[in-house]
Structure formats: structure tokens, C-alpha cells
Image (cartoon, rainbow, N blue to C red; front, side):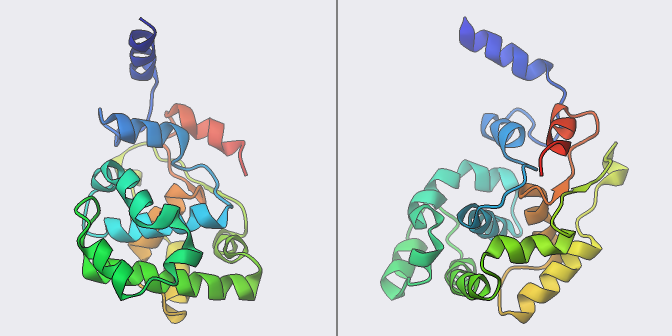
Length: 201
């Protein structure tokens, strides 16, 4: 009975249309997407997942998220930075994740560079949030015409990350990351999460 009530409540809520009826997508939308992230490990997790999403749907990544978490040591960038041939071979044989050689190699390389940025800025959070002046950008998405895949901020982020040697950090991937990490509030203005997230920093 309680589960039925929860399902009814979920259906009554007005939310962005993209989660469709996928329960994992709905949970992600309702609890994570657009929430400002300032924890370096969590930031790295979103960077890895968004890189693996390149050319694929976010639903594919969400469905495999638990597998990614297990395969990549809970996104512990310090451990991932030390991955060698043995760990690479484990990953390339892991059917639970996206077995893309370039993306796996990029995850390892990016972990190493991630820590270099930490040394320079103190935290990666301090570095990455500078691209939005350390506060979320509030957009007003009312329909498909308001959708965008990049912005001047994601262009700047992409350019700087590439200069530092990061891989799979094109402007489109950076924009998706910014949406996920709460650097941009891209919820529909009619979505129940839109105003909730405006209050967060």
C-alpha cells in the first residue's frame, strides 16, 4: 500500500520530461541532477560518468552506474591514478561497464591530472567552480527551444581542461557535467526541483 502511494506521488509531481518512466532516472533527477556538488570525489565521479556517456544516452550510464562504481573503486581518484596494465585489463573485460579503450585510458589519465589541479588550487572544487564565478547559473527552460548543449562557460572549461591534458572534455561533455554538478540549473521552470535548487549554493 505504501509503495502504491509513493508511485502515485511520483506520478503527480511535475518534473522535467527526460527521466521518462525509468525509476533510476527519476531518482537521479529528483535527488541529484542540478544539486551543487563541492566534494572532489563526487566531482570526479560525474566527470568519469559524463566522459563515458559521450556518444551514448545518459540512461545507459545510469543503468550501469553501480557497475561503474564497483569497477572504479568507488571513484577514488587517488587509486585510479595508480592503475596500471593489470587494472586496465580488468576494466576492458568488465561487461558491466562501457568497455571503451579510449574512455578507460582517459579515466586513468584524468585522475592523475585531477590531483595536479588539486595541488595548484587546493581542491578541484575551487578550480572547477571558477567557471561560473562560484555560484550556480539559473536558467529558465520552458520548452525544447530553450535546450542547449554548450555555453560560453562550458567552452572556457573545455578549453582549459584540454590545455591541462584532460581527455573527453569537449564543451558538450563539460556542459552536461555542469548540469549534473549543479553549476547550472537547467530544470524546467515548471519542474518541482527548479525552485528547490535555487535555494541551494
